[in-house]
Length: 322
Image (tube, rainbow, N blue to C red; front, side):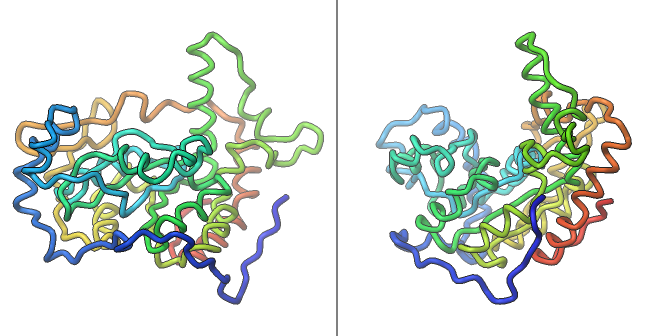
């Protein structure tokens, strides 16, 4: 079982080896031409589809920027929903696909320019955001991101750990079923049959020990560069969570209740960009979880409890987790 500890002294952080000029810091809100950007979303959409010449790109001063903020995790915490909702803000541009630059050795070896060219076109004062939830749990990633930009903003969206682990299992199970393959029950994977204790070798359990992974990130970045998003609240009451992120990113408040409407059929909030363009998340979101033995759920919650307490202490944010 993992040992929980927290060093009282500040962890010594490495100095950046190859810092990016300008640090890609976030501009003050008075520098972001929000009103103008609202009228240019359609134009950016054409550029994203590749319907643009080099001359058009030059005329509109469009650039492909290294992200100024990254959603680093957590898998099945709501990373896609968070990214899509932040994209409602006219000063935010999202990378549509998970790039997996920092957690994939082959991609990382291609260099920072390869990474930049994977980003969407944007206006210079916009903020590009990408999300790859594998970043949070991959050991090499914190140092690699630090070497790129030691002052980058990092977003972590979390859910109640046991629920997140079951959601993780459910996604894998669905993939197995599509291929007509069999898979173990969650209980068999989450509990070690020899010891009857929680199986910390099971990846879905390991990922939910948030403090274990966060402590590794804190060797490189101060806690002030992280913002913790409540993934459970983002589902039921998204606007307050998004407003907290706007503040963290130094963005002017632009996302409002108008941009979010509840779809009773899907059981989730959908997005309203303007009077003609609405968007709901993919149908694969919100999968129905299999029934799990209550004694296993109780054992998992008891196991996660001390780790959760340490997570609250480190981040300064408390959740109503069992």
